[in-house]
Length: 409
Image 1 (cartoon, rainbow, N blue to C red):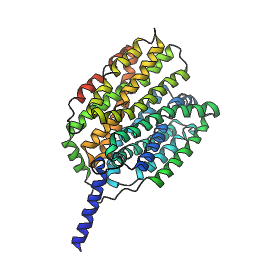
Image 2 (cartoon, helix red, strand yellow):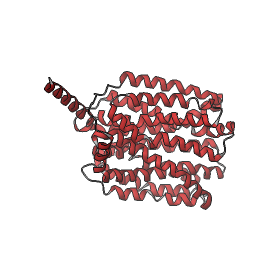
Image 3 (cartoon, rainbow, N blue to C red):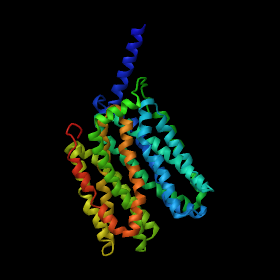
Image 4 (tube, rainbow, N blue to C red):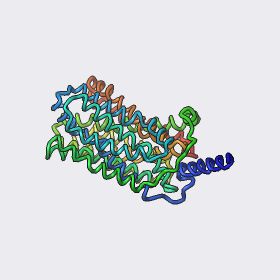
C-alpha cells in the first residue's frame, strides 16, 4: 500500500515536472491556453494604465496635494510590482488558476471604482487592491505561457508580452474617453470587460496538474541563489530598461507641456510609444529564433540610446523628429522584454512564476520607487539634463547582456 502511494506521488510529481518544464518537454504549443492568457494580459494591463490620465481630476476632486499624488503611485507600485516574486512563488506552489482568475477580478472591480472615491484613504485602498490584481496576474500568467508554448516559446512569449504592452497603451485612452464623455463615475463601465475575461479564463484555460511536494520557500531561495549570476544579470538589464522607459514616459510630458503641446497630443505620443513597443515585443521573439536571445538583448538596447537622446536634442528645433525618435526608442527597448523573461524561465524552469515576478515585476517596482528621487533631481537640475544622463543607461544593459551564458541564450 505504501509502495503504491509512493508510486502515485512520484507519477504526480513527474507529471508536474513535465508540465512546468514547458519548452523542454512539450512539442506542440497549446494555442487555446496561450491565446486566453495573452488576451487576459491585454486587459490586465489596460487596468494597469487606467488611472494615469484621470488622476489629476481625482486629485482636484479630493483636494490631494501633488506630493500625496506621488504617494498614491508608490502604493500602486508596491502592490503591483514589488510583491510579484512572492505572488509568483505562491502560484508555483499552489499550481491552480487562482492568480490569473482573481487577478483580473481584483483589477476590474477596484479600478472601476476610482471615479467613486470620496476620500484620499479610499483612493489609496482602491489603488492598492486594484494594482494587486495586476501583480497577481503577471507572474503566474507569464509562467503558464512559458509552459504552454512548447518549442515556440520565443514566438508566443513575444505575443503575450506584446498584448500586455498594447493593453497598457490603450488603458489611458479608455479611461480618458470615458471620463471625458460621461464624467468620473463612468469608470464603473470598466468593470464588465474584466469580469467577462475572467470567466473566459476560468472556462478555457486548462487545469494545472496538482503538485503536492513543492519545495519550501527556503529551498526555492537556495535554488535561485545557485543561479544568482544569471538572475542578477537579467535583473540589472530589466532595471536599466525600465529606468529609461519609465523616466522618459513620466517626465517627458512635463517638457512637452512646457512647450505648449496639448494633453491630447501628449497622450497620443505616449500611447504610440507603448503600441510600437508592443509590436516589437513580438518581433523580438521571432528574431531571437534566428540570431539568438543574447544578440536581441544587445541589439535592442544600443539603438535606443541615440533615439532617446535625439528626442531631447531635437525637441526645440525639429519637434516632429523628436516625437518620432521617442516612439522609436520604445520600439527598440521593448523588443527584448519577452526575451529577457524567456531566458530567466529557461534558467529556472521549476520556479517560473517566481523568477518571472522578479524580472517582470520586482525590477519595475524598484524603478517605480526611484522615480521620486529622480523627480527631485529634475526639479534641481532640470528635466533635460537628468534625462540626458539616463538616455545613456541602456548601454550598460547591452554590455551586461554579453556575459549571459550561451546555454540560456
